[in-house]
Image 1 (cartoon, helix red, strand yellow):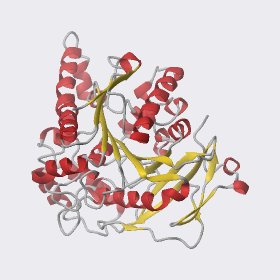
Image 2 (image 1 turned 120 degrees about the vertical axis):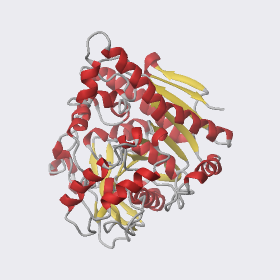
Image 3 (image 1 turned 180 degrees about the horizontal axis):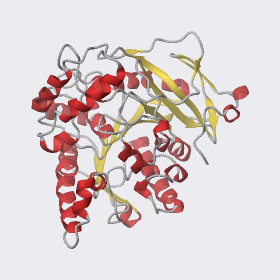
Image 4 (image 1 turned 135 degrees about the horizontal axis):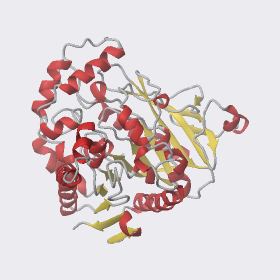
Length: 455
């Protein structure tokens, strides 16, 4: 089993390429070990610091046989090592936005549920088609259609609100992608009235905010919010103002490498704002398409009855950030007291950034009339050095065991265990996507995952 290199034309069976006649145009995809893929489909065009423009229907066939390029970004070697991603996996593109669709090859008598993957990465890192985010096992095992979305990041996607540059551009990109799904997925065998967002970290934060974004009503019916840092999503206006001062002197037409250098400087301007500075870029209340911060809770209550919710966190989220920080690892490795101090710090910050606000979010949703379930992921808890850290859900949901062989995150975990527990977790996610309902309580193998209904 391997992630197909699209330069290997023999893998693509060009003579028998699958075709879809959609409102976007005729889409030509490719076959890959039991699934059909339509990759690198352009869903919108962009100009720098401008809202996306939905891609117009094409009169020529759309060759959907290349992976979606990533948004321009600064590479993060420490995170690449954690996830086992090589620098060569990042092929940036500015000016166009892409998504990829994966569905089982076998026909279905009824439209399939649709799951839309929003990658994480603190709004500065990642792409929908990274090899470790491969959605093929989820689509094939669970008979669902999975759409992976790539969107603008960092200074180009998640600052704005200054110098006539709009805020929330990356969020607007996601809404454009959801419009594409709503318009075209039926022609690919999907059910546009049964769409589930699922996103991890910043992707989970984005899914939460898409619930109250203008223009999203009816575009999705369920949300799975994984490890969203909701505890640091509020009270950011002063930090954004300071960052904007640093960004405002950048010319709109500056070379891309200059934009990325300036992004680093803009992020540095967030220092002094506590834990919020750990994710300096993000969504901005009071800027289209989001309500003001004071109105956000009421907006989530109004949305609750229309959206089924499943959300949760890992037991030791912030261990990830300890491991990738040399100074924090030196503290952790201090004889006698280091490990205890590190565990205490992880417990406090995990609760403050992730757990506390996940519970508040789910309770508010349930009290406002929406189905809500919470989960806690314990898989690998206590296992040195990462434990049940932030991102530990990703190798269970996405990719195949062989695709994670270079990831420090799961080093030493045997492939059979990863495959077994991954299948169970993918089944749970897809069960929720099909109906929005789960048993009131349950677990996957003691010490893997536990969930419960919120009332």
